[in-house]
Length: 169
Image (cartoon, rainbow, N blue to C red; front, side, top):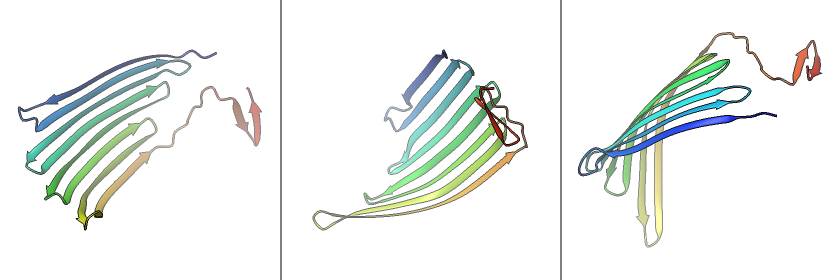
């Protein structure tokens, strides 16, 4: 029999930063502690800022943090992303965006960055038709670094040795 106990704590907020409600800050915080055969701790945080910089010009910026800890491994992740979006008339929307992600795990480190542009065009045709065109270009860079590591498997029901499988060791 396995018994699991989980404690979870979450906080969220949505704050308008100006009288005209053109700028908004959203927050999310979470902590979780789980106990069973393997204990797990997880923490998450996210801050997001939305804003209307000018008529038809909007911005988005986000920072997120994620961490988990197990008895034999842990991971920390930081993510930054943002975008600027412009609407020309009602039919043409353009955006530029970027993202950076840094993950550091017990057995590896991973860095990802990407940036790109998005263009969407939508136009009514005749009485009930609709033309939609889209273009996207994205550049992505990915780097992963890991060292040789000995991995310990807990509570394994099978053991491999010299071509034999032993069950229930």
